Image (cartoon, rainbow, N blue to C red; front, side, top):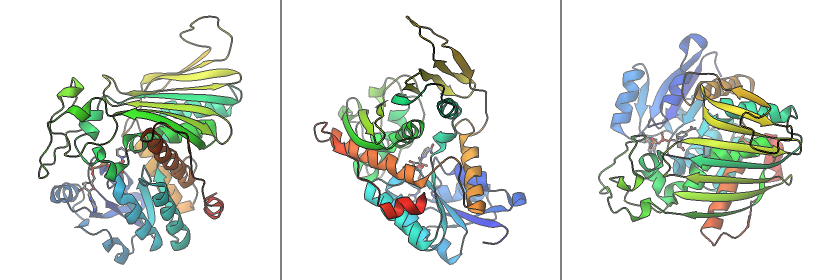
Length: 385
Ligand SMILES: NC(=O)c1ccc[n+]([C@@H]2O[C@H](COP(=O)([O-])OP(=O)(O)OC[C@H]3O[C@@H](n4cnc5c(N)ncnc54)[C@H](O)[C@@H]3O)[C@@H](O)[C@H]2O)c1
């Protein structure tokens, strides 16, 4: 690795801007190339980075001996692209979910172990202000020993963002419980210091499935976050819609903690509400955006509703993508490339969130039966520890 880190990006769609955050030539990081078959994505990239090159085949980055590549392509491509690069010794920033199957995640981990490329998975939610405050209070012992965690996830933009493109096709995403929930399952695992051992779930395609207004296979309509209302009026859905739009999952973690995650893609509002309950208290966030959210702690006995709790933290305003979390996670990645260490994210945790999401998706499509989450090969666990 030379003094200047030369990096590339695969996929310049909604998430394409992420690699640009790393481009800081004055600080020794240069974004030098994009691989994306889409001509308008290539043009948008070149407009922003005129000195960079574009290609349709990400394997060109191997010949160019790049130091690292941001994989921000659709989920079903992660396994093949990340494994190939890692096997060639190229480090990877891999967007969540790591892959759409547990076996796919394990293949990526093996490729990193044997090929030498360093793997970093972009679970930027660990940098969210509300999540960081909750983790801090839990680690300080403010709620005693964690016993239960619940997350309610309201996704008002679900129709626009996930039912007009590849997300709606289970062959490309497995399902939204994994696709979107990988973030939250990971946060629950992190806050509770454990990984799901057994899961069970129910889900349904309750609103979007009956909508006959589909794109023709030649059309590609992506109008993310437009704000269609009511949800049933969504137009131009993906030709294939076979993922659930409402999901409810229960988890038993390996340390005995019980957790639940509930996700709905036809709510009027958009935010995540977490609560974690310990032997000596409870924490909860109301709102999740910096400048418009609060984390509350109750650790005294109240015989009735106590709105403000015993301690309150207002999450300060922040600028940048996902409330500044994107800038933080890219900085964490660059530090990881330079020092080999990470402070917040972990490839093992990323694998475990996929494994839990895949197992829960199997459960909900098979009558809600409890499903054991496959464990990680001890050799991989040791390597990535
Ligand atoms: N961490 C987060 O907060 C967050 C938010 C949104 C999306 N994501 C993840 O980021 C990834 C990308 O999502 P998106 O919404 O930007 O998708 P998108 O569909 O908007 O963009 C994907 C891009 O990849 C390109 N592409 C398709 N096939 C390709 C190939 N074979 N080689 C190279 N490029 C190819 C497409 O042309 C497109 O430009 C997904 O894995 C998604 O789950 C993460």
